[in-house]
Image 1: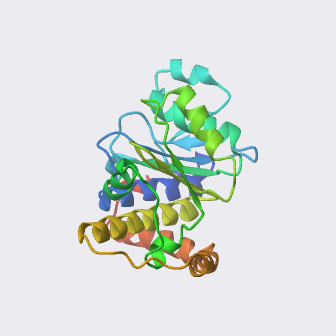
Image 2: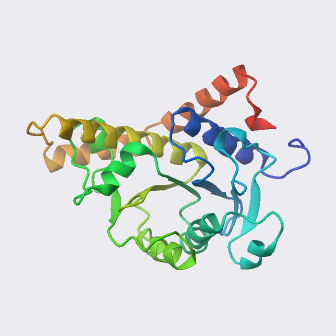
Length: 247
């Protein structure tokens, strides 16, 4: 199947490329975890990975397109993973600013989410990028079915908070596009790794003053062209390898 048959082909191929690169970076969880992308103005129709398919086997044409207001999709033969629906549908239904939603159990972010204090202090440029721009969920309620998704959506009502450290769970990142969201997911994972590795030294941390951290975050908010260039280069690398993502 090709782009002449399906709508939103560019969006489909962008999202499929993100799945493959997340797997390349070991930011995946077997056949679990999910990325989604809104396709209508209201944000209530969205693309998402099919049920129980490894990130490296996802193709643009194989992505599901769901209606966040239609729970009957769970009764179809090609129904999504119930936890994918439970987490992503409420966010797309209740948070229209969250056009793209990426949830992973990537190692370093999950280590951060497992600490009694999951705060990410600004100790370098990457950690400072997220200064005052994330929320910490301290009320993990179990597997992410509908009620858990609604609760999480409530914590993302502030458009300035684009990362949720999901305590005892993982990380969830939102953004305006695949490029914007994947770039943020990538740098948050890097930031979490830097912080956890710094903790492992047992030495005192050099924490930036709040005003420097905030200025750094502002300078890096929507840094001109970076997110788009990041995804462009990922796609170019995958294309050079004849990767299946754009099928």
